[in-house]
Length: 466
DNA sequence: TCGCCTATCACTTTTGAAAGGA
DNA sequence: ATCCTTTCAAAAGTGATAGGCG
Image (cartoon, rainbow, N blue to C red; front, side, top):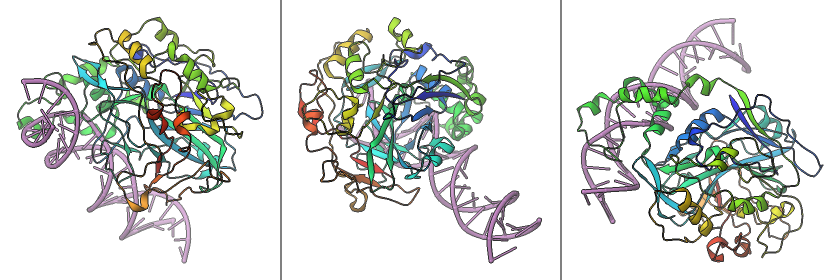
């Protein structure tokens, strides 16, 4: 199985966002050693499991089904972690951030921008049910977020991650050192994301290639794979949906194409090979990099069907660790809180502004870039306002026991001692209002964001879900 | 009419309790 | 009595599709 090693504080060039459709991420036979230097920087390394599978999906344009009742992700969010302190306890969290500020539609076998994104929903952070656990536990085997579910039900009370359909998102993995859930140590908070895991949320598959990939890689779809269209369906009318007439070929028709896609199921479950290791340095304030790189790398991924030009190809090769935003991580150092009006967050000040991190660094710039890369797109009425969020909001479902303040970094002691400790394997939605006090000003990540208020409520973990 | 969403279907895998054996 | 393995039913998950809704 291929691994993608990701180290904090380095942000190598993204292989992803620009039309990686036809280009595989290069697999390096001998991964470069993970770099760790100064003592105050973490040596935590995060590897994305099933990288080959993720790459296959990413090359086509990953779609994730979201349903009212909640749907698991496929491929799964699964990471391997190393470099943790074996006897320290950590929380493992996942949340999802929009990649850009657009709503998409599937038209003529490709994704197009359909308009401005919906206002962001209160973000939920999924907490791995094993949390908190010792570093040795997390490093023992890959960490699977198998039970994480995505939903489009804004009133969801199950603690599932609520997303908008037809939007693009990216999961972020957070590692937070915490001796117990009530004493979170912000100095050990780190965030990782993988460009390969960007996906478009849909309520029904749009791209048939994705459908094929899912069917041929997901064991739960075996029935469809082996029997093709159900007998029941054979008798049904032939109405096409949801993309009427453009997709839903029967399985017999799918097979050849599936082979064309070079699907190798065994590879996805057995093959393990180091393909790309991103060493981590210490000098790269990821946030700065992320911001500054926005002018060279569109913040949003292009339509999966779109090819990009030379920049995209460059991104498929291992780049100098400090040259990119894509493989970013966020580390919070145990330093003083930054001033509330800063636009750029030095790494060592991340502690105070964790939630501005991965947020779609989009608005106007993106709109421009998008219009360039989507040559076939109709004129967009841009600029679009930046993403919106509602930090510190309670669970919209209003389930009394499920959302509670989790921590308050700006409290007297910043001890973050309000983590809830649910029983393992149990969902629990929790809200917190970290940074809400001054976040409105922090949220503005650059001049492109005209409205501070829009960014102002962006929270990292509005609430967590167990 | 179009685009998106949802309930339902038939199937499979996963899960966990119960039973049995060492 | 404890631990391990096996069995099996229930639960959960899958994509496809008809039909609803705005």
